[in-house]
Image 1 (spheres, helix red, strand yellow):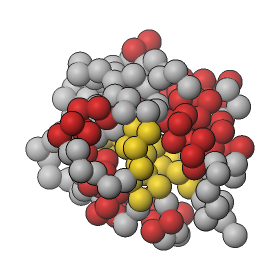
Image 2 (cartoon, helix red, strand yellow; image 1 turned 120 degrees about the vertical axis):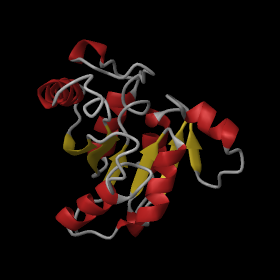
Image 3 (cartoon, helix red, strand yellow; image 1 turned 180 degrees about the vertical axis):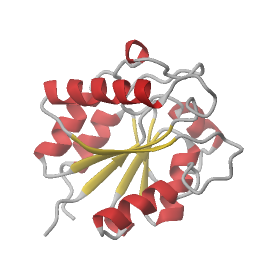
Image 4 (cartoon, helix red, strand yellow; image 1 turned 90 degrees about the horizontal axis):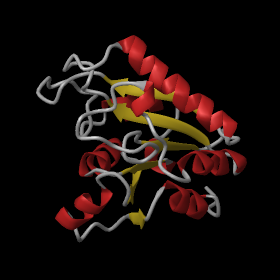
Length: 181
């Protein structure tokens, strides 16, 4: 049986978010416990995949090489904590592009499912924004909300969400590590 996957949004879930965008490796700062959460998920047999909108590229705030350097730092720091990120899917488009890959559209999740030949119905997508929840539902995945990043604001605007809600990625990982799929 293939290992189950856990899908994660990046900004606000793994690292501190910024309204001014994360534009350099120096600006990429992990949320306390998030890298340990990735390691915990790996220890319990989950492969971790990052699904992230990165419109800073379309806005000219950073280029692909800088984004790659940011992701290299994220992956290195995860490894240092005993974790591993299997693959990263990005949407580099702006909010008005109409592309199918920008969350809340499910394009990146569907691309992942097609490439890995899996059914998303048994896959969890952890995010901090309503568009993450919408993308999960649109793709047939199970959404989980964390209160880091935009999570508290998301919950305030959508108080009737009937999904798993956790304080942070580590708390979500602890919960998921006890589940059997």
